Length: 310
Image (cartoon, rainbow, N blue to C red; front, side, top):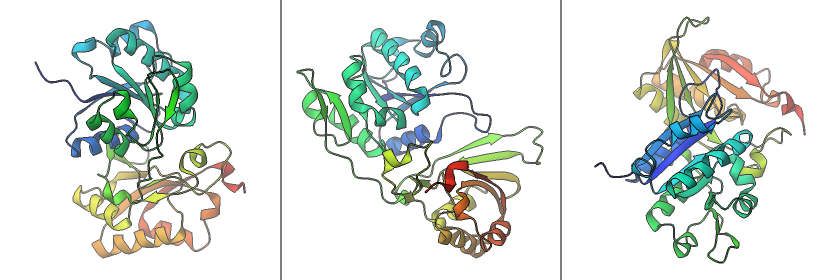
């Protein structure tokens, strides 16, 4: 029989019309842990019937095989909107398998102590970035003594009290991580694209938009991928030309202004022709920005309305 994976990780969320497959966040965790020699079994709990409105039938399908197919640790990653669904699945997984249940993502991070205190079927919550925390957690083990040595966790101690370990330092340079991307094949795209490539080149945002949890999670600090690494990746994977759209999912790709200039330099140095789209704040767009967007192949910029807030 095949050995169990170190971790079975469920990606909990809803359908998104611009994205197909696993979220970039769980793919990034899998890439990092695989590089560290740790096997991760990804399972999707996204979409109608799984992420949006979970039922007994859909949960049974997701957890089919029980202890024979799931790892000793079952993780569930979600944003704030899908925290109730993640808890629903977590309770079912604990009842069926008795596995160690670990929650992570923006939603659980913001309510880590409250979740562990209120839901006995949740054994721990990973706070903030998961790469280094999960790697240490999976190598150390999940008895109480081992959990206490893993930075970035909230867990239930043997006496029933909620314990928080030391804060996990941020990953400062995304060049140190594998570049995670997802490719979506398009049919009859009105803009004429055959493929859409999704990737992230930063974490965190300096903005303070009222609808966003980034300041609570990242503290207004930002880690970025260098434009050298991004362009080398695009060149290596041949993501260029007019038939592929590269979608940069950073909340604010165009900040600071020097970042766009760096992209222009690196594209020119490598003679790359890329069509791309991104998100930005209104404040990041000026008269000198528009020609650079055009010259670097920008197809679309999406703005957050509350980006004007101070």
